Length: 211
Image 1 (cartoon, one colour):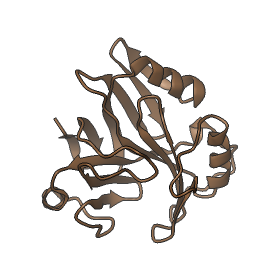
Image 2 (cartoon, one colour):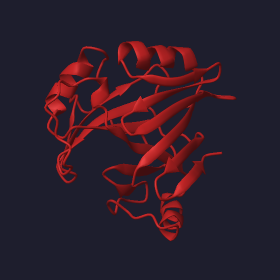
Image 3 (cartoon, helix red, strand yellow):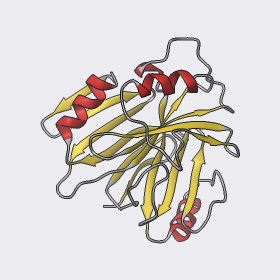
Image 4 (cartoon, one colour):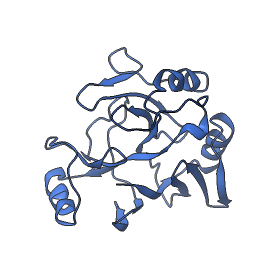
């Protein structure tokens, strides 16, 4: 499953744009008074001005499966890494993946994840252009199981069985991380809240959540 377009809301448009463009070096492909769009590999990631509140999300970017150490070093020079139980990286044994997390100026919990089962190794120096795609988007719901059942009825598939407060839907190229409202995000202090999300998914069209 591939995310072609991801649209999120923010109350920190200009600080966010400066961060991704200047701190991380991500290419801004379009910008206006109330939005900007980034090129995250094969995904167009857009932040739009929020009508109200302080929206924040969880998103993950796939990176080459052999470059986790290089990616972590690159990122550590630019941001403060988030920690969980004293650790600044995650070893997902059952997912065959390693990940590192940080927060951007809007409080979004951003993850770089090397999925070792994917055939995407690279011998190029790691940089912003090494971000391959948006591979996870957090979708917050009151009733996770009922919502996932709706997705399964629309032709989606589970990546793992999960639980009543966490189910990953899709595959390693694109996952909807469906979590229960007020569950604490992994590697973060924030509890999950419902904010608007618009996705264009290859083979599934446009989906909107939290509106």
